[in-house]
Image 1 (spheres, one colour):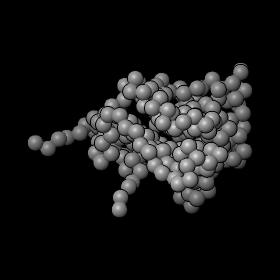
Image 2 (cartoon, rainbow, N blue to C red; image 1 turned 135 degrees about the vertical axis):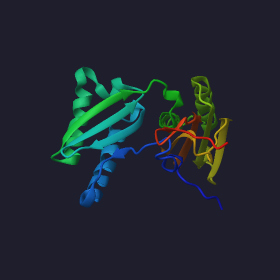
Image 3 (cartoon, helix red, strand yellow; image 1 turned 90 degrees about the horizontal axis):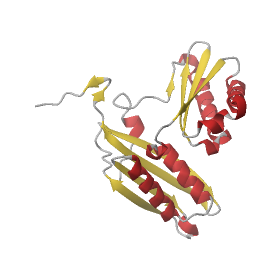
Length: 219
């Protein structure tokens, strides 16, 4: 049997960091559910904005929500109407805490696993053939300069009676090497045939630092 672990959580404190940064104590469960509600609200409200990551920082009285997106204009809207809307929506979830929203643009969206997975989801939900969607994603990632990419799609592909999995790989994706920088995403697509799961791994090279210190090689 395969023993699998999430590539992001395995590399925390090596070359990855937490998406939420705070200490909850007795209020840990409430804060955790708030974080999940914030992420769900942002991802569903602005589905077309190609959001890659939602980071949450908490101080004593203030919550800072950082949104990394490939299309910041979709979130900000005309005259900042979208930004104020998202702030009001988050304030309703947290109740009583001050909210600050930072919107940051991703310069290379074709090299981001979440954006690539969401693009494939949008194409599958519009009934595009899954092989074409995978091929286009790999070609764009190759042009963006990544060292490797792997895409796996699982479910009733093209409406088949029996669910199956199919993979497409370009370059190297060394998942067992902890120093390798692996960007990972899992996103489900809700099609007329049922739920189809899309997993994307993108290899961006080896990390030069571990815990913010240079890597020491044994001679």
